[in-house]
Length: 367
View 1 (cartoon, helix red, strand yellow):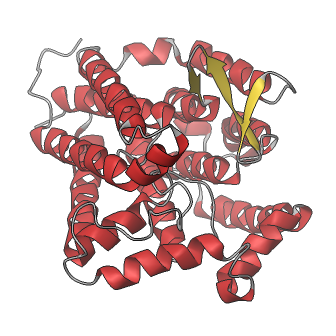
View 2 (cartoon, helix red, strand yellow):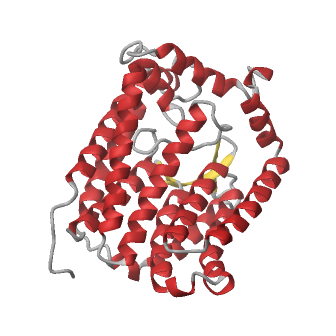
View 3 (tube, helix red, strand yellow):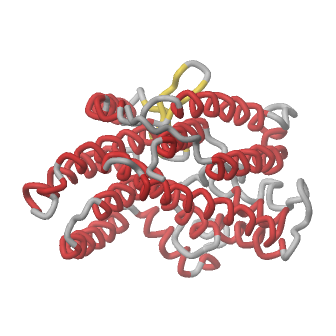
């Protein structure tokens, strides 16, 4: 245990709670129409569940914040093994719950969990331990880099069996960010980038629905009622919002035009109801959170803490960038939630737990 302990990063807490509050308000606003239609007039259905997840996640965040982050080093292998077991279970026919064509959930009573969300955090902890212990061999492709990448691509393969390209992409990019931060050679990344592009092309060509998403991204109006429907409806929400938006609760696209707007496309509803200013505030809060995360990483007392902070901050940054790029039509549609804002229990809870770890690292940061 370090002798010096400071207060948790206050600006990180402010940004987190501000995003969480906006998320709760917007989940209700975006989902009230769909919830009333689907659940017999209960317009608060999604809001109540999101409030439960937010409350549980906040309690866990404060609990984790008080646990010295170094303890996660000793649980790294056990946690990753447990997550691999969950990923295997979820792809077994009849065990995993199928939603939207993907078997990504396991039922736990009245609720469900998404093992891939747990795997993202488990891999960040495991890689932080591995890279901090093997930094000297990381310059060697076979001795250092390949062993670091094996669990990453094994997890990616299991996630693709669901299939869930969006979550798999976030996982891989987060882990590559950590490996680069640990000091891997740039030329190795160039080689891996070429291989990755070839692999991405193969994945797209192997699934007809991914080809449709790609073609609809280039010109969504080719199939406005099919593969281009979501992005068109998203842009019809963002564009008319203007500077100030239509006002909180006044979205038009949530009236069953934009499918389940409380999840992946919640930023579209934010832009429609709160306008450019509301969307800009959300983005500035994310920038504040990422700035504090990187500052914590730079001031961490040891390499394990630095890489852990880089991994958590990178995971959030990558997920935000992909989600915003999707809803604004910059990249093809993929199922990625917007951290702290989109409806989803596993994602929200794990994000708050991750912030708890980041806050603990900040308490022992160098001044």
